[in-house]
Image 1 (tube, rainbow, N blue to C red):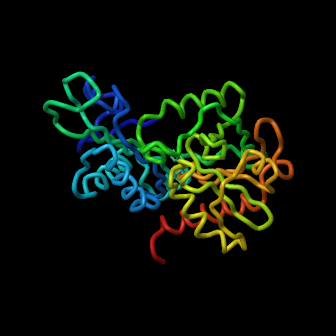
Image 2: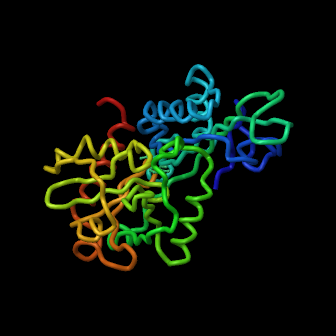
Image 3: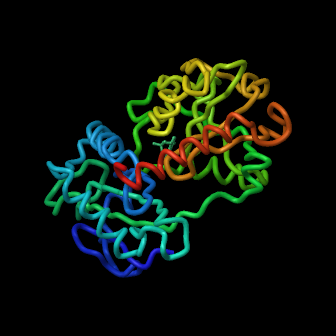
Length: 302
Ligand SMILES: Cc1ncc(COP(=O)(O)O)c(C=O)c1O
């Protein structure tokens, strides 16, 4: 569990009072965030995450600091405070961490949805957790998914924007929990696959690596982009195409991708097995490739 938290330039004890009860992130989910992975104190694809944070800020008109430097410094400070910037001598997998950077519009003392009246400006919170590798059973059997009753509306101006308003995703995740599944599959309003609650979805079928287009309302995941770029190395043809639930069920393999959890196999959807029993072999190869790539990145140039 985190011992510290970085708030607006200061490292505080994790349980210290840090934001006001009038923060719009708390009251309205009026904020944006990024979740990142770090190893040996090196943040994976940091630039892509910071760029996406800036893109998320635009539709909501949230004012980020003009330079990335304060956020980058905050990440370094929290990793150091949590002892997660080390080279592996501690015994744990070398300084593996999950990070969350949250930016809210800040505190306003006035009521209502429109931000009005004086405010001290955005609140920036950065936290880090030790990241452990997944349970080996998950890599052997694959995750189980259930189709959520939540639908993503690709026409929404906030579709694919990483806002802190996550109540629908929480709802979907609770549906998965109640069904004894690991995660939920979210379809868009046309009934096509969009993504999982916090990961992109891919299907592998006859040499093709398929994933829903951004028009499905899914997040433009950084790991998704990495997979589309690296697919040809594995003789896979990357394709963004509409997928149905039935397409996933008849795929050779299905996988989820996200920065922190990495590439994870999916073994079952709504209690039906996908492909051969258990995790797909190409998925596990892709996972190993990405983990090795992260490790090389964290060691810096040879
Ligand atoms: C809804 C959603 N989709 C996809 C992803 C995967 O994105 P990334 O690979 O950038 O972590 C995330 C990650 O947090 C997410 O929240």
